[in-house]
Image (cartoon, rainbow, N blue to C red; front, side, top):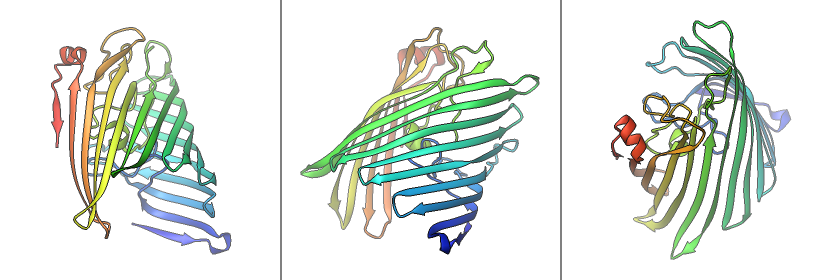
Length: 308
C-alpha cells in the first residue's frame, strides 16, 4: 500500500510513499510484472510533476522488496524519468537510473542512461525505439580492485494495425543486450538488467537473462466481440541468439563456443488467448514452446520445453 500527497498549488504534482508498483515506457528497464511468487514491488518514495499530457517528470528513490530466496540481496534504485509528448503522434522518454546492488557475491554501482521514442505517425502504423548505456563499477567478493562496467542495449518494434474482418495487427521486433566477450580484461560489457517486465521483454517462459542476448521475431494479434466481452488472440515467435564467446544468458552460463559470432540458441513461440469483460475482468490462457538449436541441445542436453 501507499499514500499520496497532492501538491495542489503546483497543478499535476504529487508525492507517493510506501510500497509501489512502477511501470515506465515499454517496461524494458522498470516494469510492474515479475512472474514469481513475490513479484516486483518497490519500497520508497516517488515524486511526480506533469504539465497536462505534454510533460511528465518522475523522481524516485526506492528499495526492491526482497524475496525469501534472496536474503543477502540489497538493491536500491534512484533516478529520474522524463516523458515529453509534443504531439499525439510523438513521445520521447529520457531516463537516468542509479542502481546500488549489493550481495555476497559482488557489489555493483551502476548508472543506466537511455532514451525511448514512441511514434504513431498514422492510425495504422506505430514504432517503439529504445537504447541505453550502462556505466559504473562492479566489485567481486574477495577482490580489491573493482571492474569497470560499460554495457549497452537497443530494442525496437514496428507495427501495423487495422481491420480485415477482425481487428488485427502485426509487429516486427528486435532487441540486443551486450555481452562480456572479453572476460580476461578489467572491463565488464555484459548488460545488467534493472527490473523489467520479463514476460513481455523475454517471452512467456523467461528462459534467458537480458544479457548477451539477441532476439528477432514477430507478433500477431486479432480480437473480436464474443460473449458480451472481447476475445483476443496473440502469437509471439522469436529467434534467440548469443555471442559464442560470452557467457550464456541461461542454462548455467558458461560459453557455448569461442569467437565473436552470434550463435543460435533456439526458437520460442508464445500463444495467449484473452477474454475481457466490460467490467475489466479478464480470463487468460497461455502456452509457451521452446525448441533448442542443435548446438545448445548437444552441449547442455537441452530438450524442447512446453509451458501452459
